[in-house]
Amino acid sequence: MADRVNRWTSLGCRLLCAAALSCGPFVVPGVAEGTPPSPSANTDFPIVSEARLAGDAKQTRFIVDLDKKIQFRAFTLADPYRVVVDVPQVTFQLPSGTGNAGRGLVKAFRYGLVMPGGSRIVFDLTGPAKIANSYVLDAANGQPPRLVLELEQVDRNAFTQQLALDDRPELRPTIADAKAAMPAEGTPNAKPGEPADSRPLIVIDPGHGGIDNGTQSNGELEKNLVLGFGLALRDRIEKSGKYRVVMTRTDDTFIPLNDRVKIARSQSAALFVSIHADALPRREGDAQGATIYTLSDKASDVEAERLAEAENKADAIAGVNLSDEPTEVADILIDLARRETKTFSNRFARLLVSEMKTTARMHKHPLKSAGFRVLKAPDVPSVLVELGYVSNKGDLEHLVSENWRNKAVGSMLQAIDAFFAKRLATATPDTPDK
Ligand SMILES: [Zn+2]
Image (cartoon, rainbow, N blue to C red; front, side, top):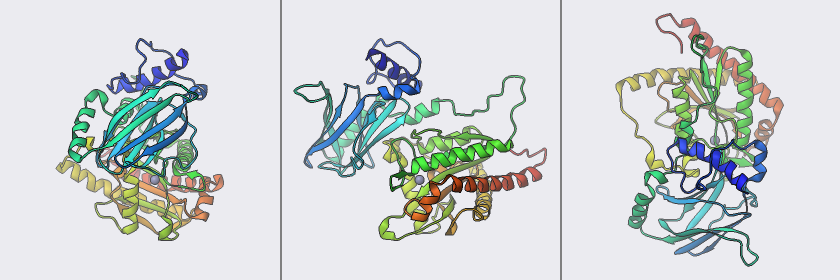
């Protein structure tokens, strides 16, 4: 037991402490640094075996059953009203659909990994509420250890006051900081004396991850489909030898939208490709095929607007404090860069459409634009690819087919080659290509 605690605390703490988060709520005092957990340690994580809600719209209680006691931290977030419970990494063994239906003050809840060593439960509230009480109970009277959260209805004022209390720096949710503090995978780290790798750097961004499943259909989750696709695309691009590749994620971890953009910018990426798979709400009929999206202030049509709104919700879903986001700085230079970047993004999007249509089924209007937050790097040409609709039978068959994936990945590499061929050809020594 001590060994297990030691192992997870060590990793969780290293990540969290790197982000200047007080380890207080999570840490067993006096635990020394150890070796990070091995993959086989996964089976050692505490198990959450049941979750239930009780009460009414004034007072709502949430209870989960555990196989051992854990430490936790609970806090509220505004706009939208949410309650977040952070725990060390746990294994959720809950029936599918758990959390879809709410009760009382809870509209719905979801759960999952938000970072290595850290799991999270996020509650969407029906209105402002405070955490009146929260505690972990020992096993007693035939009941397992339980984590209990008691919510109480309050007015907006009282909610805001509690937020201020929750917002003490040592209590802030810091996924974003923890991620930013981690070295990005594939960071070009030329040793002194070695020439830097000047090949263009491409960032591949599989959408969603961890607590955020994205769209789903027939048991297939967008986060898994797009990760599989992204990894296959990385392998194909690397095999060509012409480019460097950095992934925003290589496993089932949540990455905030801003961090995805930050990774592209900090690495001076030459291209950013976000990979997703859409779903059309059943009442809106059926749609099929791949669509390539670029950034614009005004959505190109209603569907593009719906989609950008859905994709931009990722941070709210994962319990990220949206009010913490930096406001965009207006700057004439950024404006100029943005304009040039837009031209490149649009060119790559057109190349992608013309290459992908030879192997993949395309949407009837395959080129669209809307205000996707993940496409907002002012200086990195960026596109978001919706590979298809998980809600469409034929598309879903493609999305889970390795054969289809290989063909689609091949077309994408063709488009990438075409994109960089022209830029490299027109680059002069005075305006080196990135
Ligand atoms: Zn998505």
